[in-house]
Structure formats: C-alpha cells, structure tokens
Image 1 (spheres, rainbow, N blue to C red):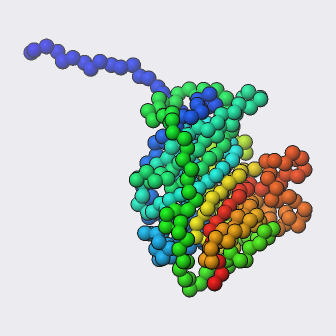
Image 2 (tube, one colour):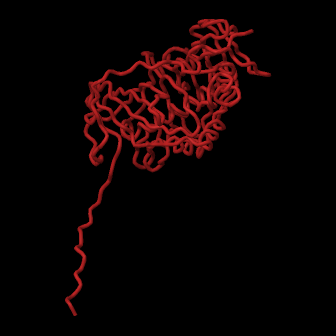
Length: 378
C-alpha cells in the first residue's frame, strides 16, 4: 500500500444573491452599458409578435409588398425591435426602477430582417436626483444593432430609480466611457430614402395621405382585453427581466408593485395601442418615421381592455407619391375614447403636465407623438 488516498479539500459553502439593474448612484453620465442579450430573430418570434398585435401596415406583413418597395425581405416590425431594445436594457438600466417615465426620439434607421441577430447597448445621458433624496431620474439612449453593426432601433428613455447603490451586482466587463459624440440617425431605411414609386395593391385599408387634416380625431373602435398569461409570455419573449411584470410574490407579498399585483409591461401596451390604430391610420403607411414625447400616465393590469384614439397634428407632402402624417396617439383602459371626449375630458393634453388633479384622465394609460410615411392617393 503506497499510502492513503487524500481527501479532497473541502471548501466552505458560500451563498450569493446576484442582483441586476442599478440604483441611482450606480449610474455615471457618459458610461455605456453593453447589454448581454444576443438574440436571433427567427420566424417563430416574428410570427408570434405579428399575431399578438395584428398591425395592418403592409411593409411588415407582406414579403411581396416589401420586396416591391426595394427591401430584400419583409422587415421586422419596428415595435418588436423597440420592445427588444427596451427589454434588453432592463438588465443593466431599469430592473430596480420604480417606473418608466418617458419615450423620446424613437427612430428606425435601418431595416432588420428575419434571422438577423440583435444586441443592444445604452449610454447614460443624465442623472437627476429628486429633491426628496430617495429617488431620481435616469436618462439613457439605447441602440439596438444587428450583426453587421447597423442600428435598427435607436431611442431615449427616462426611468425613475431609487437612490443608493445596488448591493450584489456582479462586476461588469462591458462598460465603456465613449469619447465620440452620439451619431444622428436617419428616419428612413436605405430602401426608402429615394422615395420609390409605391407598388400597386389589389385591396387596402382606408386612410391615404389626403384623408387626414390637422385637427382631425380618429376614434378607433376595436378594443383589446389583456390576457394574464398572454402578457407574461410576451414579456418573456422580448427578454424583459423586471419581476414587476411576471412575479406575483414580488408584486404582492414583497409589496414592490404600486398596483399590488403584476403590472403589464409598458412596451406591450405601446404596441397594442399602435396596433389598435393601424387599420384606420397606417394601413397605407410604409414606415414609422419616429415616435416622441411618450409616457404611461397610468398602469395596465391583466383583464383591462385597451382602446385607442389618434389626433392629426401635422401633414406634409413629400412628393407626388408620398406624404408624412404626425398623430398624437392615446390609449385608454376600460373606457372608450369617444365616451371620455363626450364627457368633456381632455384626452389629448399631456397627462403628466397637468397640474390640476381634476383635469387628469385616470383611464389614460398611454400617449405618444407618432409620424408615419404613407401613400398618397392616385
């Protein structure tokens, strides 16, 4: 016998509770966070999103129509891209946030196609502590890019974040402080920048450029009741990791929800409201030129029914075939916009700017300015 075998060295057990997102003091203006998600957009993801939102814009639904416009395939819907960019950023930016406050300058500068792989990063533009000292507002710019480095969705947002430093966050390997200024991004993808002649369609929805005039209000009649498992499944589909949207124990028992239960993720509410409006104002649109000045004044819960209304703010002829129309789009829950308007409510006024509580519309859950490129008649 050449000696007893040695016992392996026993290591004392340690426990860790990793946490993600950031508290207010963890943000540094100018820092860029490279988000870890790296996702290939397969046909199943795209089809599920299309089925969940039923958007009528033909560019994103029809390969034949998209190819006739000069795209190599039908582009991925812009609001799927926005939801991916928002959700990817939660891991580093807002998993500890109290609330999402604003959408600013949302653009879609390049087309993204099925089987592209997308990643995202966010740069901190501002950190503003509240006078109360227990929270503050963080302003970031997020860029979603596909595998060749082309930006396919760029937007800014503001989030309300608790004061302090987050304990338990793993060390970041992918934070940089860029020296280069932020690049201005175009509003149209390359295929549309020369404004091609629109393809003929055997049939189409109403609402061509000439049908809209400043001041017009369109009351969209379809409603959408949000299903419980539906909103959690779609939240997971786009990789949103904030437990407020899918963890009932976190929301109710740990009392981390301002509603006392799970709250529907705002990016889905955004997409449902735009989809509810699409037959009336975007069935002849070919691209989202941008969204701006958006907010969620009130939360949405499973079982709520959403409605939409659009007010025309501006119209601009681009050439003989195309024009752009700017709308103020609002979403309501459990009350139709026409009912609210007929009762004298200020539905299109910026909700968060209203100082008088009596003027606020408790049923309003979304508001944003939207500009689309659409076909002209003839």
